Image (cartoon, rainbow over all chains, first blue to last red; front, side, top):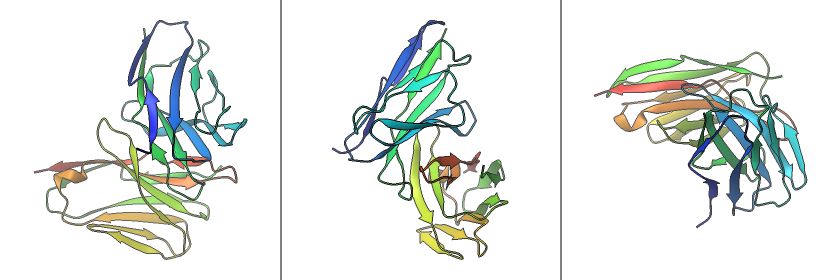
Amino acid sequence: DGGITQSPKYLFRKEGQNVTLSCEQNLNHDAMYWYRQDPGQGLRLIYYSQIVNDFQKGDIAEGYSVSREKKESFPLTVTSAQKNPTAFYLCASSMSPLAGAFFGQGTRLTVV
Amino acid sequence: GQQVMQIPQYQHVQEGEDFTTYCNSSTTLSNIQWYKQRPGGHPVFLIQLVKSGEVKKQKRLTFQFGEAKKNSSLHITATQTTDVGTYFCVLTTDSWGKLQFGAGTQVVVTP
């Protein structure tokens, strides 16, 4: 089945540790995105990428890093520099900016 | 950069009633997309509007793009409990395809 997969669904980490969230898609989409959503809030863009080996900062990139070494994969690292990392993280992909984006199921990260 | 305001932020609707949510911008938009997110779920793409004055329908949902391309609306008729969720309008704000989400309208349906 074609789709976009995020793993794990739930993740717990201790404060001060870096953690990497996985995002894989087999839709052959060029564009990929990472968003953060806090309870009762909208989606805020962290990073986005249109092509392999290139990506752009979104509105809240501080404390996060990404890589795009393969078209299918766009992992997000939440570093210890991110002050409030506990949130729901959503990855998305799209064929082009003017096409609809497909979202993964999301990863709920809790830092204690 | 470009931003949109979605109103209302919350909408309580009696089952069977109609309602409309709006997305307004101070600048002209090239296009606008709408997504729905069910409670606990992920956003799902509903539709994209590109042309001035464009109207598209999906069953009980009617989407409209303003003549000046500065606003958009989503109208739902005969609301059902399956319509519960948050509806977002989304802009493409630069040539790199940055997708900018509005704050959303959270819809609660009372049986």
